[in-house]
Image (cartoon, rainbow, N blue to C red; front, side, top):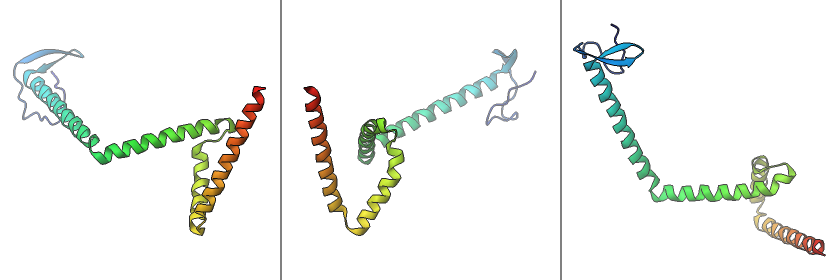
Length: 139
């Protein structure tokens, strides 16, 4: 009769006692081995519960909640921008390195406020163009 190797269980610590028939590939498992296996499974279950409780406590901390809210907002904005850019064939991931480089250049030169003004004027111009185009297509 061949015994199954159980993690953390030496042959010296588990003497062969009465055997209990277990349907594992036609082999029988000793009572002590079965008991040790069940104890080990119980230990894993308890460790899982402790880890789950710790994860819940970590997730309920204010800084974690704030971080998750910021991540959610950033994902929502990014998905909207991706939807806007979809017809052009580009997405945020391809544009972001160029945008970061441009923002670094503008910040270094002290041109952030003028650039924001230009962006606001461009956004207003685009809004006027699309509004005017929609108004013309209605007639």
